[in-house]
Length: 94
Ligand SMILES: [Zn+2]
Image 1: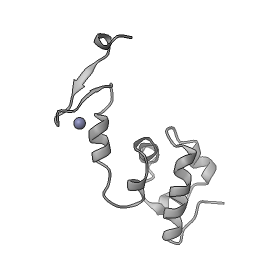
Image 2 (image 1 turned 135 degrees about the vertical axis):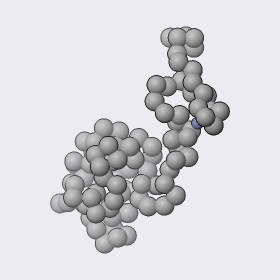
Image 3 (image 1 turned 120 degrees about the horizontal axis):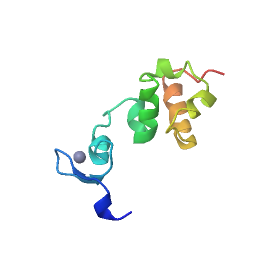
């Protein structure tokens, strides 16, 4: 595929990117400033959001296996999630 066949886009902030999705740079900047979602990579965060998991309480209703089945979620995110849960006195469903 040559560059001309790709869809070069420029977002409102002036970032240029080849993608059909939202601007990846802005996506990163939209990161929540705090909370467990802020420590995750963009794909992992989206995976949770797509499954309506936006709080640690909701996260604790899932097993680690179930979380890993979310599209975009990688095993590298699990330790971060586990730690975030522990800090709130929560844990994944056994
Ligand atoms: Zn942008």
